Length: 300
Image (tube, rainbow, N blue to C red; front, side):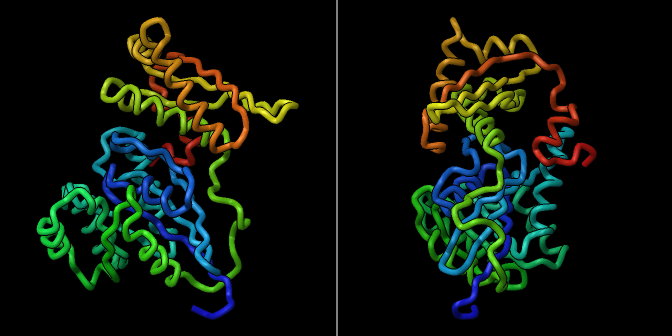
């Protein structure tokens, strides 16, 4: 790296669903820019997380998990992931140490190998596996023709993340920074607010309503006292799903709203008045407008 020169570039983080991509990008950036859930395929669109490491601006592209698509939304998400990888300066493949090389991870490795593109390998969640299992997985994954370097990390605990960041920063070309120094993401605040509520929805409902919901921020008003009034709609596909989201006596939606408002207040550093409603919209997953909001290709 050239001394006293600024550097900037894009690192695409790819991997199977739920390997910890969003947790890692939030750890690297130092604040939440991508929602996190134990459910797979939580990230639906490409999210940029912007990190400063010395004179280097590292722009991480958090992509949707790559898996075998079954629906239109699945196909659009996978296309977005590979598009993000193709446009980036370098690719970071994240593998779940506990899960190992499942079919989705093997397919990603095969596609990377077929493209002739080399990647950095990071094995995540090393804090929850036995050392012998980790060594065996690492030996299986080692391929100097495909991976330039391998890192053992824990996105949750932070172990190994600083070393990974330093290595990735050294890869990026000289050039001016591409974003203001204090910007941590390119995601509009309205979309981030909707994503925060969707995360709370996933966390509260567990397996009851995995992918039949979406959240839209309908209005955003900055009040004279500095507070923000946000109105959102949770769309479901059927009346039975609406009843699940509302909960008995509306208690479920109230819990979701309270948790989303608390986190938004921390992120926005101001009082937030959040109003969340639930509406039925059949086949919202086939609505081109939703795909434009997420910057996804409806015809992928």
